[in-house]
Length: 183
Image (cartoon, rainbow, N blue to C red; front, side, top):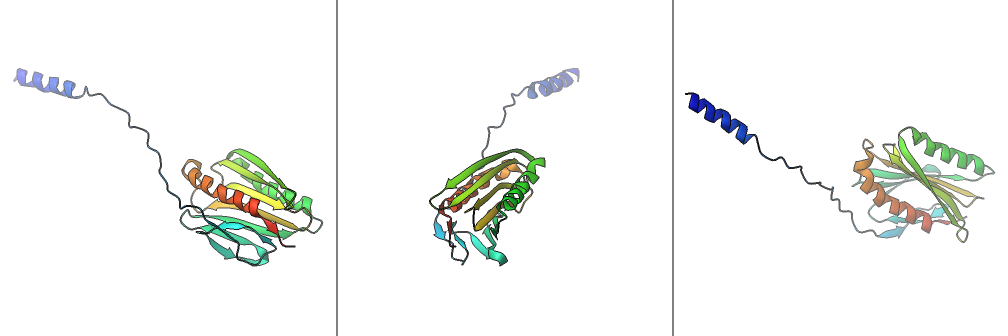
């Protein structure tokens, strides 16, 4: 009986002596559709190129929502005419950006200047678990002002949505680069 007990105890200790190997790193593999752009089809005091596989929601006061249904995201665009209030509009836009500073790890600004098209503005990349990861504003400094914000319809987990943010950031840059004022 003692020999059987000794063998069982020995087997228990021997069987627990396996090498534990860490799991290899796995990376999220997301595939996004190839980008094709088209000119904004809605009548606005501005025009730019939008991604073809998005849906546009026409709103009052020349506002616009560009929906990314597969990504559960949207770019919300507000338009305001400049009526000797450019400083107020710029201050309001920056106030909305820095409202996210509580949850943001970093706010990275990038300025845009295109005197030929009269497009001047800034893009703010907000890292961390903020409600909006990208915000921008552009103006011609005399008549028109646009503010845009990227929102996801999920709880903001920056690491998880970072690939989608990068994908949409290209579209925002394209929007700014192709922006034309109509008046």
